[in-house]
Figure 1 (cartoon, rainbow, N blue to C red):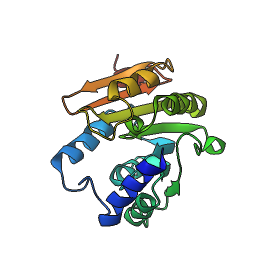
Figure 2 (figure 1 turned 30 degrees about the vertical axis):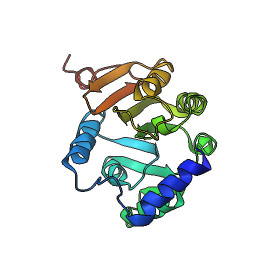
Figure 3 (figure 1 turned 90 degrees about the horizontal axis):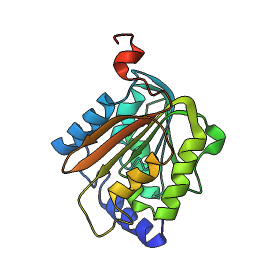
Figure 4 (figure 1 turned 45 degrees about the vertical axis):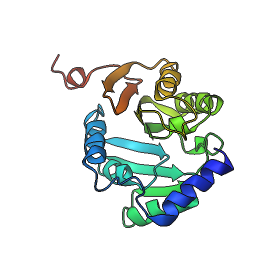
Length: 201
């Protein structure tokens, strides 16, 4: 991301640890609940969550994952996320710029969560992120994308384009949840439904 965009986020997180109201807004609480309920497994091993921001989703993921590596490219967001996750021994928060700092050496990841991050990336960078998702996802791994749909001035590309880029990886899609406000999709190398995984069908 550009230095101008970095300055934008530094300004946001310089005023408050939670500039988007992730803790208090019902919209955000509900969206996290839908995302978490859409995961095809109760528990995951190694998880990567770039663009973690204030780390509210990180805290929820930590309850269902053995290890969560969360990251953000804004130093102030990283500091806020570290404060929010202090005491969670299975969470580590690092400063990563995408795609250059993608933690290839720590792969494979059982779960990769791209929440409200893809539309800040230029299309070329998003294509590189998609390729990195494909390269670092575990043999039975799950990929999640959840993004705001309405237009706004700081977008680098549309949510539809972000999700189309990820779909080009070719993973079976398990969930497609579309609302006026956000789009959530879940893909997995294991294309079975939850009912099939549990032997119900």
